[in-house]
Amino acid sequence: MSLTKFFVFSSITLLFLACGGEKNPAKFFSLEIEGNKNEFTKNQLIGVKIKSKKDIVPDRITYSIDGAVLPHDQDKIALNIDRLGKKELKAVVEFGESSAELSKKIRVLSDTSPALYTYEIINEYPHDMEAFTQGLEFYQGFLYEGTGQKGKSSLRRTKLETGEVLVKVDLGYNFFGEGITVMNNKIYQLTWRSKTGFIYDAETLERLDSFQYGKSLEGWGLCNDGSKIYKSDGTEKIWILDPETLKEEDYIQIVTNKSLFNKANELEFVDGKIYANVWQKESMMIINVRSGAIEGVVNLGGLKQKVKQHTNLDVLNGIAYHPERKTFFVTGKNWDKIFEIRIVEK
View 1 (cartoon, one colour):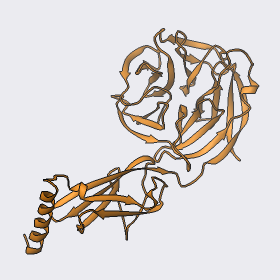
View 2 (cartoon, rainbow, N blue to C red):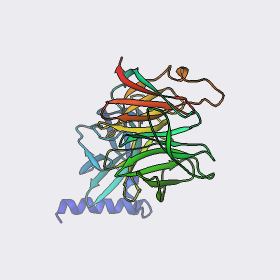
View 3 (cartoon, helix red, strand yellow):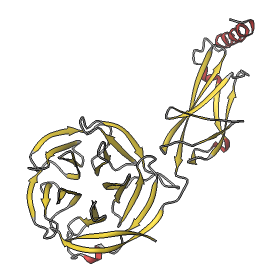
């Protein structure tokens, strides 16, 4: 140890003793953000400062979010992070033989506003008006549907052109069915508040297994990208699940350029984006699966007025993408029609 480092280390030791044997060096510093703000946008340059309470001069300061180091210059850092939402800005202060870790909770939102879209109706098809639609997906020429309501929840294989229910499996009175997705010849179906999901054989609809939720609060929507399953739960989070273990390995957070968003319901994965029904709204979001930013909003207003109006008519819900036609199929809870639409930018 050099003489200089010895004096620095000795000084720090004396500081510990002067503070009654204080063993937490982080209490010698504070992390301050310019303007005391806690909400920013992606790539924004923000002012940060480490203030010493004991006149200690740091040897080195490292800032990071989600484990990724953020370059800084003259007390400025750029929030060029991949995933947006609620974050913890960490600062590691090195001085002498010691170091201290400080943190601040912040929100990082999108730096662009969503593009606006509308729709064109291509076709209309019959739909079971008794189906409280929660999930919708095409697989091997058939339309699969998950429905909700206690005592009425089911998984179905249907024929698009006629609306005929070819095979139907009931979930049982104790379960409120939610979203579905099909992957590797298996169908995965959520339930709402039972913290339980089911796995079926896609050919026979035989129930193969069940799985339990992890940290996610509820079961809302499901989709997959061919290797991972994505799950909404009524919060701003979309959970990323391992399809073999069904464990929640990670999550993204849904954000706009103004706030976090917590109303993603039924999900569909198309060309690297997640399309999500907005709960209790006649609209659909287009979500960047890497960052969580809402890149587009599709106004689906007017569709509900085109179906039979009756006492049990409920909100729009259900998205299925047809890869050959390159069109979307949407319906709602207790609607008597499914609409084939093309999304058009305004």
